[in-house]
Length: 251
Image 1: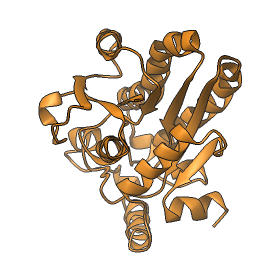
Image 2: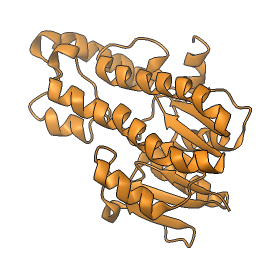
Image 3: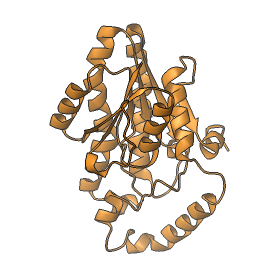
Image 4: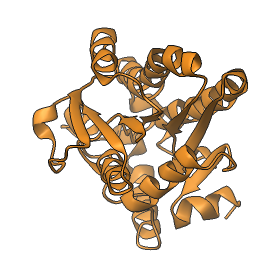
């Protein structure tokens, strides 16, 4: 029975991916910053471990407890919606530390074991915002585009050891709110700089209208991650959800 470790499992894509792999009979290590927040069901095939991907000590402890891992899924991430001018460098660093540097750090933690066993899969979760430019997402999009580029290049290095690296690209998902987490913490007094407010209002209305159509569900992402983890012939970059698939085709 294979073992998968997934980051960011307290809600959303990570939680659904953990449930999906449990349904498929895998051993699942679901990680999150606060395991007390877990709503995952009790299962003999499930372990919930604390993991903050921005902390080297937390990463070391989690991977030491996890043991041999067949698949690593880097799902933990921070969403951010604001004008570039209204995004402080502290926020920029926090976004990149989670979305990109955390991904690199967990990959470095899992690779020695995979290389020694000459097998393994790494699945990194990016964003459909990387398919085309969107306003108010510049910093977030940059961090996710870096994840995609990182994975594509790393895959070329790792193939010689029997290790695959893939990218799953979710579309818009109403269950994953940019108003949560860092966005809510930082922007309590209003999200956008005054000079950008009218433009932001128009952009938000357009995004809400787009969200009224077909959007990505957490199940779409879980199924795409499963394909990336189990299908050696799947594309390097795999869109998840009807809207992401349309964007990938230039729609």
